[in-house]
Image 1 (tube, rainbow, N blue to C red):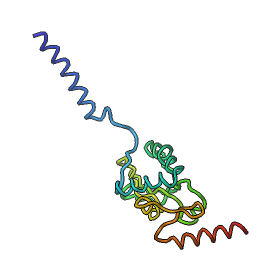
Image 2 (cartoon, one colour; image 1 turned 90 degrees about the vertical axis):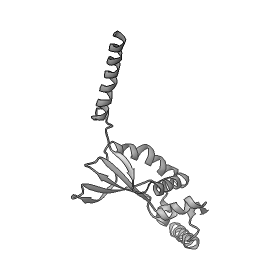
Image 3 (cartoon, rainbow, N blue to C red; image 1 turned 60 degrees about the vertical axis):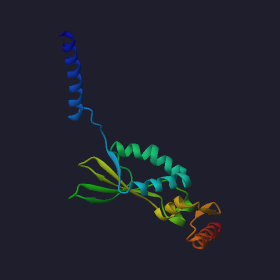
Image 4 (tube, rainbow, N blue to C red; image 1 turned 180 degrees about the vertical axis):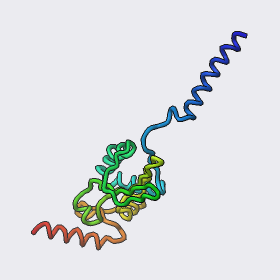
Length: 166
């Protein structure tokens, strides 16, 4: 009979622990990061890691933790009061010449305040990053160029170099 009593005490302890977790006692605090399309976003992240390591490190070690803590960095683009969402664009560090050729590297994300969810939408310029994910990109004068628009990108690089020389 005494052994059964000890068993009931242990069982009660486990039951109380499970009830506390279910009721939210052990609930994680902060925002959760979600994706619109996780596969596409991970491809963009891997390409960013390969071609712009500084932006990738800032994104993973500075910006993602601040988003999880509720510190929304970047420029507020739009607010939807009906759905309770805010859309932000965060400019990531990149080479000046790359930004002039392909555009600024930006993270676009939406915040759902009621649900405490941050939805990561895309990283721009997505065309060059996805092309870099599919196949190895070539460089011209230290700047990566796309295979589809190689002559156009080389012309832009030459033009910008000529303008800088003046």
